[in-house]
Length: 302
Image 1 (cartoon, helix red, strand yellow):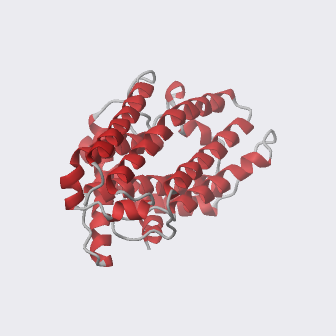
Image 2: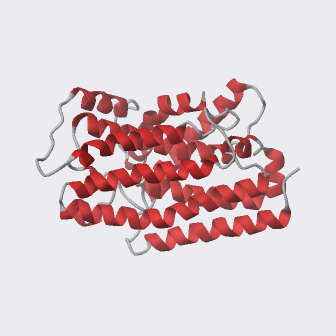
Image 3: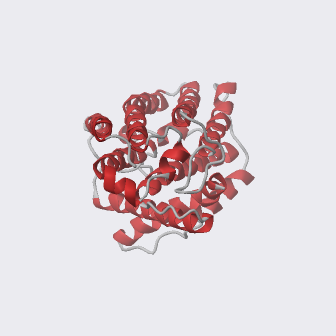
């Protein structure tokens, strides 16, 4: 059920972010369902392939979307059970997201464009610093809860867990927020709407994609944001009643709250200098590492 909710509402979260940014800019903004319309329009268009590309370029969007969808099946939504759950599944989630990124980078390099190669190089550099922060943040939550599957560790994050391990969960929340922003190319780490060639990172890698391929990329990006928003929602909205509809409603409210926060951050902060981005990512990893030490010192929550 959690995976179905994420897939249905993922493009809507992008609309919430755009409307939040429009509010701060004093504009009406695009419709909340605009991303759905854009994906549907791209699916109806044709695809243009350069003669310099190979099957790698064609396989990139499909494999990336498949990897993200598989990872989404292991993400719980608050107290709502994930489609698949087993001890250590968060490691597989990290590897699947890495596979999606790897195929996107390969597709960009396959074009033979130095411009896309620059974006791919920056993407890999930031990913090497982001993945440790993600894993350490999830390990800190597992250390505090005593469970090692995503569903089990988030199922017990309630008011009692916050009372016992508030510092650990707070540090994990900050680290996951930083990971969410950089993994989804959001300000202050990146800007998905930039048109400045020297500052583009993720967007430059998909410039040659069109039609359904671009639709797969856009939908995959929306689902990935929803996945990280679900992890944050599971921490900041500790509602675990045992009633599926109550827990799902609270988790959905958390998803929209995370989207609004992302829109507010993009509206109120400037993009960091590219040399500052690694420093922020290392700080997130250190914060998550400290959370693990504090969790081990405190023991498992009752």
